[in-house]
Image (tube, rainbow, N blue to C red):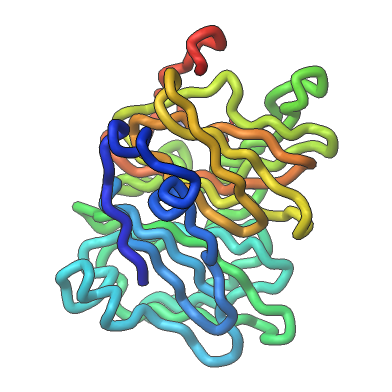
Length: 279
Ligand SMILES: O=C(O)C(=O)C[C@H](O)C(=O)CO
Ligand SMILES: [Zn+2]
């Protein structure tokens, strides 16, 4: 369990490479047989890597303690996507969900008994999850890839041909705050989210994945007038504070999971940055 404080852009702009990485990059999201968690003070988002094998994994007392409750999900909701070819079995208060590759699961506030296993421990599941405080209980629900309304965007000419899949989205299911989706690039396309945008009303986190070990993404962050970069590798996550753009380019194609929480649930609520304003 790690804790990340929310910091002002004035401080962020004084940081060197190591400082930027310490505050905004999560290098080890997953560890086999473990739940790894990063508690952030950005909209109190918790970023989790859940990597079950045979023994069921559950949310332990450390997670509950950091939220100041007796059970981690007591006042929280959670959304996850399985990025592994191996399926997961997720049990939520007696309901059992099989979550296959690139399927999502929403778990509503107050789920008391939650456990994760891999259907075949020889092909372990890898669940990327994000949790946010929740004011109401909404039904648990699995979302398939087909239900995520795949939306092709971008062009080969701009090297940004990709498909945006919206899994956890108000058009499909109610949540208190969480939104989550998966964007996948066509081979040869590498640019995500350019023109860049900010949304001061919401925090966003990106998990980059499906990259060979020698591939990297140059993730752009910071205020549009003072950008910085993070070198990000496979299965690493980036925190994007409300004042920051979140964009980048890879040395090849890749996929990423975006997740947001904050004041609204409108995917299109983005303040686009004119290209000439970027510095
Ligand atoms: O490919 C994209 O562009 C995205 O997926 C954008 C993110 O979803 C985003 O930044 C939403 O605010
Ligand atoms: Zn965004």
